[in-house]
Image 1 (cartoon, rainbow, N blue to C red):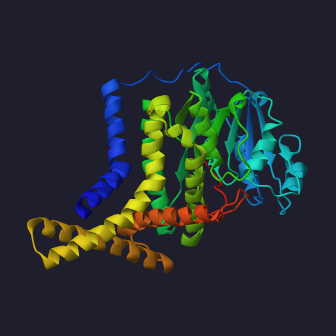
Image 2 (cartoon, helix red, strand yellow; image 1 turned 90 degrees about the horizontal axis):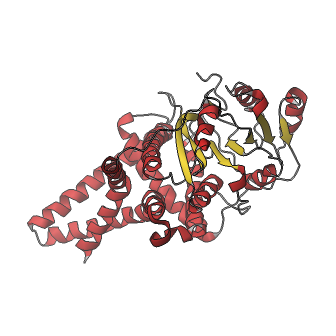
Image 3 (cartoon, rainbow, N blue to C red; image 1 turned 180 degrees about the vertical axis):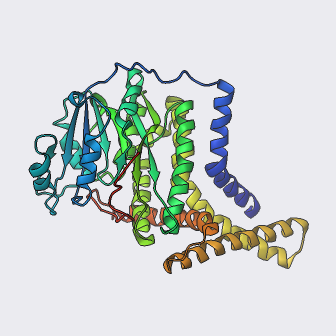
Length: 403
């Protein structure tokens, strides 16, 4: 029984991180590529760029300059910065320096990012609304590239690409985060090619205004909930890698841990609120993508990993008591697990001392990410998650130049 359970758990983890991507790639190859995005150069619908900005005064000069520098007809774009609850003078600064070019929605009450987004939609009169974070920088063609997908009436939302800027001086967590997002971006490309992506990144995504639904104020992963509800209505959530948001990694391992645990808690919250998508008879390919890419990643693999270790430890111990060819395999697997998690532990210790060894990035970040997922589950079950903004320090507040 222990052997069967161990093999099932291993199979689920392998499928989650490797098998799913391979299956989607094969399905795309079998079916063949879809037609490319329409490229009518005259297509430039009116859009509103909404920027939630809670206490982001240090980022605002670069963000506003970056927004105003977009290669998109100025008469077709409106800028709306939501500074609700900010206490750093953001509202006053925007009004004083960019009052003629940028609209600002302030307020003294701190109700959270979702409440701010819901409030902002009351003032959006354009057919398309684009959301982007204040601490990111967009490439100059981002808006132009992201809106072109809306020429297809089946497209209800479009996700841009999140890119993490790292260098040799930044943390192992930051480098791991960068590797993770490269991997995630490739999966999104395949998801979009097969059917639809399952979840947009809040750093940059666009929706048809008429499809935006006010989400619950305590929602943690607003971008994920909004985009999946649109997909659940039968619309496609497209992916545009040539519309990207650049962001520095978290300032420290503790900041990244805080962010990951919050995201994990939001993942479990999302699974509950989107439980209707788990019906394969009604949602078909969307259900397959959602379960394989998200539910398994958030709720299955993190639980399987400690089970694999414990079951393997028991089988290895039993093999020492009663040697057998299969027992040798269990012992070998357990030794490999110990080496992997040992490398992760060494990576963590080096990170604490601000020493980095790239060879340890993958075992460290993989273990770190799944440990945070378990901590997020505990946080969700305890009901301690909140919808209010929690600003996480980044390695650098702004990026001064984007090519």
